[in-house]
Length: 118
Image 1 (cartoon, rainbow, N blue to C red):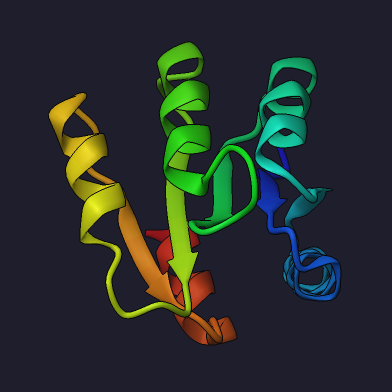
Image 2: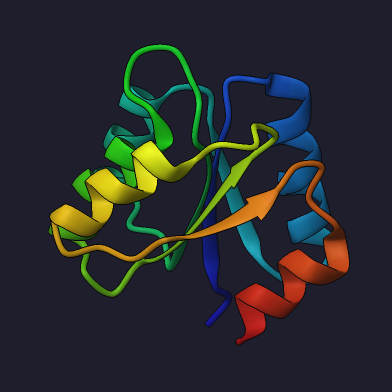
């Protein structure tokens, strides 16, 4: 079965680009351009992985990851950010029992694929 990755980013170009790269490397990728859309997408088509930007308008990536993994505990999460300080988001997730990994933007294809295949 082809692993399904839900890519979440309010930067539509980046989200679409990452989804295209994942598709080229054998994954099924879907895209959500906001945190609220990501939660709805995950409920309708449960992903194996979430690749989400942290800092977005409305629901941020940390809250998206928490909401989805509380409903879908087998879903693996990779967060991404171009900002240096992600500690507030990660601390909030850890207080709720979640330990999410953060990739630095721009996300390198080889690094992303290594994480997804781990």
